[in-house]
Amino acid sequence: MPDDFVYAGLDIGGTNIKYGLVDQKGKVLLKDQRPTMAGKGAEPLLHLVTNISERLLFHAAEEDYEVKWLGVGTPGSVDSRTGKVIGLSPNIDGWQGMEIGRILSERLNMPVLVENDVNAMALAEFRFGAAIGYQSIVCVALGTGVGGGVIIDGKLWRGANHSAGELGHVSINPDGPECRCGSRGCIETYCSSLAMIERTKTILTHGLSPIFEEILDGTLENLTIRKLFKAVKKGDEIAREVIEETAAYLGTGLAGIVNLLNPDIVVLGGGIAEAGGGFIEAVTAEIRKRAFVSATEHLRIARATLGNDAGFIGAAILGEAVR
Ligand SMILES: [Zn+2]
Image (cartoon, rainbow, N blue to C red):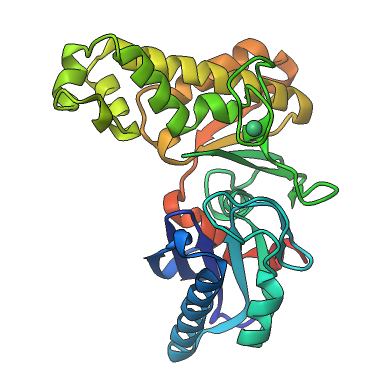
């Protein structure tokens, strides 16, 4: 493989499409992002993705980089053999059934590999991030939803129908809140940023604590996940309880997954994991309290290191992962 061979990848998120070129050591050579404008529907989004891909490949050509394939990460389950979105993609009307791989490959005249976005993130952390050197990895993405990606013995675990890794929809309470997946009490219904904000709001309707009063300018509607973590750092008791409760829910679910898979490492990524406030430490304590000693003895629990770049980096290296 020539030295000037580079990887090219796109990560289609609910808010932004992030994309870039990555060298063989994982160094990002170029990156940028554009608003997804998911509300405009699937066809305009496909045009945007094609447009970004062409510019990315043109830039690579300008720099004399060789690109062998393009990788794309997208929400929803993806048939990675055909590049077709087979699962529901919240926020993008008509995206389910979209044959991104085939359409892009025909337009760009090169192989295009498509994968679920959190699976791509897991691959990136495995190859260039927090999980370098480990073989069995559970990757958790904590954001407006809760996603997961599983790598077993160095290989992405896709399952029988490309649906594996959805750990946000492991239920930890049969009578818990209704989930968008149709079940109840899924990890996502407790640990997504939306769920955390809702729980905090419910408690604060009885009156704002002095710290929240200051952070929210007296208006509960101003509450965001960032402000919740800000309140924790300022020592707010309610905020601390919400974070600890969330960590306990997540740790409970993950303890089961750790017992099932006995991974080397659990990587926690996304805004909530990166916010600090003792969250990861609390999740770790809960997993260790609940899972088998034999399953946690050598277990590492770490924060993701590639941040927002993980999705497009993981997508970019898909051609290696499927070989
Ligand atoms: Zn669910």
